[in-house]
Length: 332
Image (tube, rainbow, N blue to C red):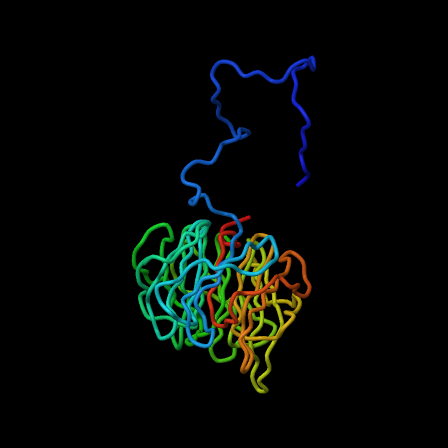
């Protein structure tokens, strides 16, 4: 979109500025409507959050970044539980963190534009960990867990317990990762090494369907993020032989088919987490045997290529959960 720059606005004769008289209200699609309501509920600022995870033991700390910039993460606040392997999703105003290990069904929420500790949202239908979450602007979905295929959903703007959405195609869906457009949710079903990708329509309920395959069967854990068009999955481990991967795959969310190669993470690792804006995908933390990472890397989602350095998390952490107020499920 081109810049529209105005030095001055005058009357037709060029002798004076514009004058407004009489009734000064108007309606129409071309008018400017000023935002209303409390500032903290307007949302959409492009803030990414990384919460819980493992930093030598489980943690309840939330960190945040501004996705459009680069730099180190800052402290946001604390969640109600000290856990690793939770999941997270968000609307443009509210972030939800759910589950974690030891097995938990707790859902916490925070207001993304502020900082501070979380509040109780409700409970999942079952204990979940090593699972993933995705969302549209209204609905959040929590997908799978160890040896379980079920998917829960909540309405993000309300408080309350989750309801059953449906099932993924795989029976064991630990370490899965997910992303979304405003209408479609996409889940990479990890667990025992697999390359299966599932999808469903977020606004309905029902079982997932087959989308296609990733370029490699991997586990533990592919950082999933998206804009409204393209989804990315990064990192993980292949088996036989066991090899840490730096691969990033991409899909076109509105279509069906196999993933293609996007590029590489700078550092091969597992248990990495991801968040996104409409333009950038950000991958933070991760693990290789004996080492937790504080690395944050980013890519431009609409292109292909390797990641660039973004900054550092406050802590070396793996198995966290990440979300943002500007991801693909909210539209561009």
